[in-house]
Length: 156
Image (tube, rainbow, N blue to C red; front, top):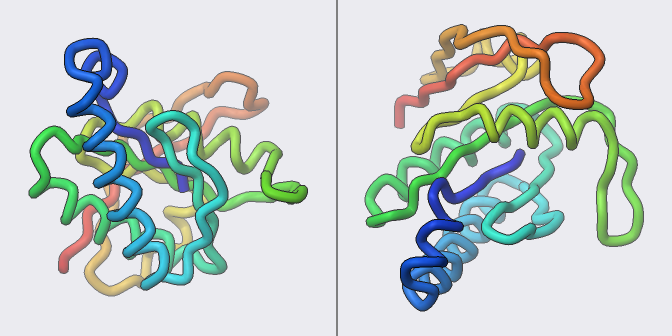
């Protein structure tokens, strides 16, 4: 799962103190929900967070909880992208096509939304309170095949 604060770079240029305060709030929010949904904080890249999960369900419900709470925090406009795929783990880092695809999907997402790949979508069909709608099929940078992207909504 990749998350990113939409408009953060502009905010940093306008009011770096406000932007940094929002970044700290974002960290706390992520850590709270990652703990509850068995997520693992892998790394922070600027205003983005990369996390992994042992199940698609945990990733989706965690993303939903993060987005629900973020919507009530002024200027915390998150984009979230989730993909299920192979990764290579190295001490303190993770690499591979799975990471790249999650990142590219996150960059396609609208602020306040959760976008997932078709591999995640196929695992969502029987999840309680989860709905998904097809957004588009996209050729993502440095990805061999087009990826179908879905927008997920979660009933809490």
